[in-house]
Image (cartoon, rainbow, N blue to C red):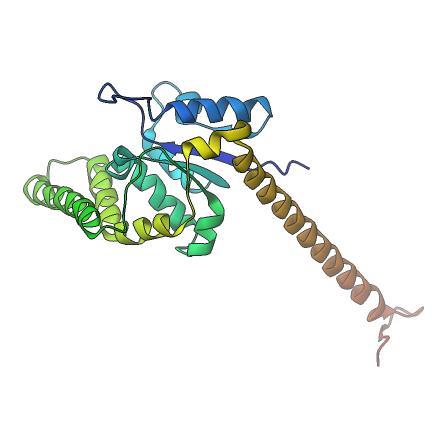
Amino acid sequence: MNNKAKIFFSYAWGDDDEKEESREQVVNELYESLKKEDYNLVRDKVDLGYKGFISDFMTRIGKGDLVIVVLSKKYVKSAYCMFELYEVARNSKFEKELFRQKVLPIVVEFVNFTDTLVLEEYFEYWEDLHLKWDKLVEKRKRQLSQEQFDRYEKIKLIHQNFGKLADWLVDMNTLSKKLLSANDFKIIKENIEEYQNKSLENISKEQLENQENTDNATYIKSNVIKGDNNGNITNNFS
């Protein structure tokens, strides 16, 4: 039985504007560390493939067992990243506890969402982007492709749910990159193992319940209704 969790990476790619260590460096280090121990990993730069559809990959991330979310300022302003986070929430039935169980956060750039000014900055960012798309759709609705309408819907969903997503991230006990990378990412690996062990327990319980239901059905079928030697149907409990 393969009880390995499918682990996705959600992060903003590094770029030329970075002045210090790339935000992607911790992703590379963690990916290589987990890969050496044969974890079941899915990462865009490795698994998406040449000409693969990013939109499909974003949806796949939401269905992953575990998602390593690498938080940065660029992440919180990225439509791709934030829609991935939205998909995780949606596949968690918008239940905070289920969301917490699926997400493994790493902070590479701290965004203080408890500061009202910072929170307002990001609300304004997504509101402004949403309004720009509203105007474009109103003006070009006969010319836009279905994919562009889909992009518009994604922006709308991020804007509508940004407050909830930001609050859930604030409420989670996130640790810095330095602390999480200590001892070869021991804390993250312990969380993955805990998830996999619980999943295995749940599978075993489900199999046991199914077997009991099957046994009960077989018992009822063989003992409640039988035929006598003359072919007449008899009920053993009558």
